[in-house]
Amino acid sequence: MGIRAAALAAGLIALAVAPAAAEPRMNATGMQEPQLAGVHDGAYAGFMSGINAAALDAPEGPSWADTGLFGGAYIGFGRTISGTYLGIEVDGMVRDIKPASTDGVSTVSFSNRWLASGRLRMGVPIGPALLYATGGLAVQESVLKVDDPMINASDAEHVWGAVIGAGMEVKLTHTVALRLEGRHYRWQDQTFEIGGIPAKVGQDDTMVLLGIGFRLN
Image (cartoon, rainbow, N blue to C red; front, side, top):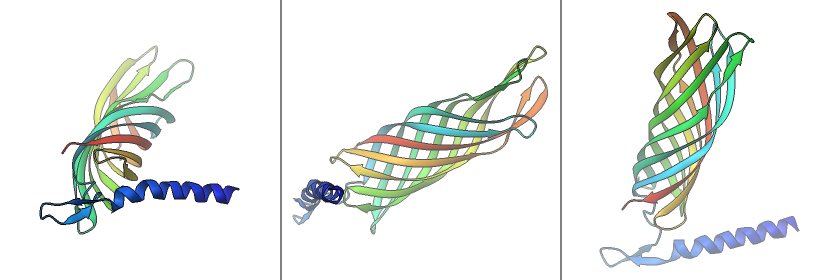
């Protein structure tokens, strides 16, 4: 029964994709070309949301782990050249990462207010699907806060890092596409000043996101 169900599902997917991929249209020279030729090319914008797992380490303090949600938007441009997709994309997001630790007297907390990145994308179009890798630079605003009977202070810093990832994007129509993507961010160790005392914090983030994009041309 399981094999028959899988075969039926595969057949339905093939029937849904094949007509769109095979349907011809006329190009500027009057010749027929596939309906999906260059379907991933051009400018686009979209929205994304997902889950963020963060790991933080303070060499002279606590180590934290936290999981939260995030949401944001992206915009980019790409072109397929000799069967390889090349593009550039920027994005911004807000997220809910707020790890904290306490000994009953003092509380140390950390938060990320926003995050942005600029990345290259390179992939291989397969009909309506695009398999791609991405990588680039990222920046975020981080806040370290200490609540203590002797010290009640916080420090906010812009922290730079690198991001790599991979994903799959599927065109639902000529203008709408869905994507599933995984990313890993590695941030530089940042020193915060709390009441005149330096505190170094390192951070890594792993994200899984779902996005919906819209072609702009």
